[in-house]
Image 1 (tube, one colour):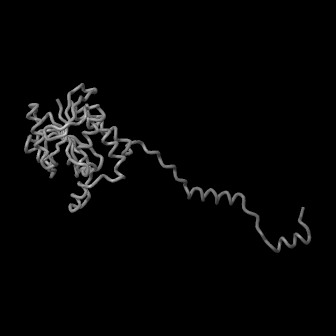
Image 2: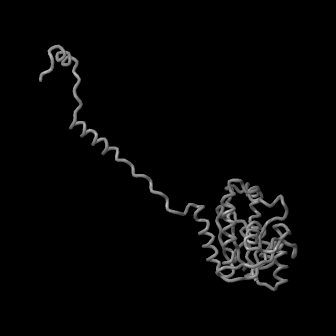
Image 3: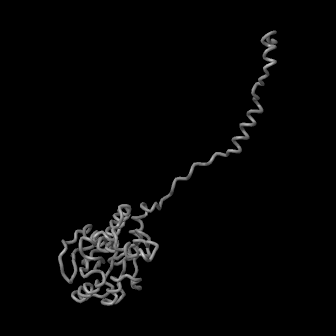
Length: 242
């Protein structure tokens, strides 16, 4: 059994926050793979279903803690105790300030890096669980971090956000036993959006100097007829020589 934990804050007013992208990711997985409707248990919103793909078929449980971010570990601990699971059975999806928007990385273990939801899970479960870090970018100024994290995704973010969530959902079955395949599959699906393809070569520039030289040479071969007003007058009076 695999447990897919999405981190976020409960309630409609938080639903589109960058801090809730973990909720968005597990919802996308559940919707794509036909998980059962959500119900409340373990101080969380849960959905049961299966992940099926090249890696096989595995029972899965989506968990969205409803305790607010700072106490996410309480719900995770209840799930672990009820099903008698180890940290390795959990995959946690959450926002990462130190990753560019739309980047997705997976690893096992590590520090909390200031993320209160991860810090809470570390305290209740230990830190040897898998983490899918979803980049939301850093605002560039520490004083703006809180408003950035607890702010809605902008309209300009929708294209990459939807594509990324779809890529995570499509690649989710690889989380059964192949984290690297999961990461590479997500990356391949997002490559066209990032422009990772051969760009058309720019048109060759004309050699301006060579063009000017050719024009000068052509002028020397075919000089323009001279225009002499006095000569023209004489020819008009006495006629032109035959």
